[in-house]
Length: 177
Length: 61
Image (tube, rainbow over all chains, first blue to last red; front, top):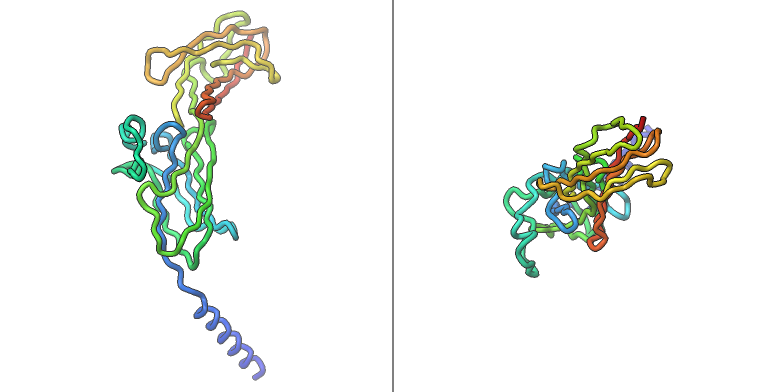
């Protein structure tokens, strides 16, 4: 008999809180991770891990892997860049479209880590920005620049053995991340 | 650039030149005295704040 009124009170309070909480609005955010002085981190390099996190709480709002092509070479690398022109958001170009649910204007950290296919060249970069519920960030969106080169040995083989004083031929590839 | 490194000390190094194939570079190092080494690749473009490194084990008999 004494439990019922307390239970009723708890249900009423919980219902009140649920009704008072503003509904979250889905908000789309396009993210492009791009190599410093080069093109997008595409599938060829393993892509990049993208995470959107609420700064105040550390809560992950969205995460995924950027996949796609490295983008339009002429547009990114050759032609002059004009303010407002789209550089990265072209058909099949690598990118990650996140959808986050926001109840209020929220400061969000957006991070990119890659290239995922080359652990020796992995770097992480991030920036913070204010997002507003329902205000989609599309087009080039949030652009994150990843610095570095990908180096790979072609010769000698792993754990090679050579003779003291002898020449060691070295052959390697170097590409942008 | 390629380097032979042991205990943080560069024992031998060589500039790798363009090898005639896309993104490929080559050069020749001289093997130091007998021992276990790190063979290190290093690429540097400070003007663009771009650097890269990769290494593997090298055994000199």
